[in-house]
Image (tube, rainbow, N blue to C red; front, side, top):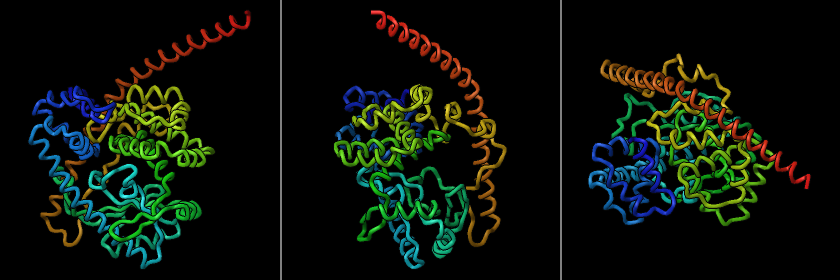
Length: 420
């Protein structure tokens, strides 16, 4: 029932939202809306849903309390977005004083091509690209703004300000106490190339360097593919990817530049094909672009099968997601380690200032609750994975048999033609 309701929501973004799709909203029981809204919030597209309903004058199809909640969240997120812009300008000023060049990734750089209004986008942190030679200068500059290094993963350095407790889910769209910045540090020559080919994004009377339009688009595809290979994917990323395709649909010069950028990169071809296939599966309504059809057709048959069979199921899962990505044929990570990790989750609250008994108790309570929820998630999803592992291999066997029969028929037809 829950997946059916979520499928109904996705239909709103599909082929020409008709009255039948809207009427399904009226069939959602009152007790079903809270869980549905939580999923939409976690998937990052609740405000896009509100915008879609509003622009078509379909507010009457929503319960009044649901409409009021969405409208209040939009007002809160507009204030949160404004605060995020202020914070970005503070960081820009600190970096300028330190002589640090940077590129803004995702977020505001996707407006307006992929996101018509920044206030519709739920942005949890600020992503910046910095020359690897300035890694430690960046750390010093951010420290002057109250940030500390909280994690390093590969070429990504995560900085946070201090927070004494977990944010309340009810305050998801409100301005938050804790701020986060992710610094991505590619090799110096890669950064310099991207910076020189970048563009100026102007807002609030200031200019920030962003990636070129082509790199922003391919970055979306790579981001979607990255999360397809992990537990959680957000529907909003697919919506924004589709919006970007629609924006450039008739721009042949843009698609020629995309082709030049991916021509010699098999990984980027695959990312573009996977992102396109998943978006088409989830949202159905996709602008027709020959290059995207070509990239989609180049995917391996098993990857296409996984997207067709599990794509929507993964996207309609509860947060924090699903382990079904481990069934993908391209996945090379240790499945046992991914299924049941033995390490504790990272703390999401970092106390600053004086740490008294009350703060310590709150942190311990929040961390214990978070750890228990993660443990339950891993056990539940591991059991579901075992069941789906059997079903997936049965599907693979059927697929191979079908492919074998089809190949035999093709060879037989070819011999018959040759004998004529």
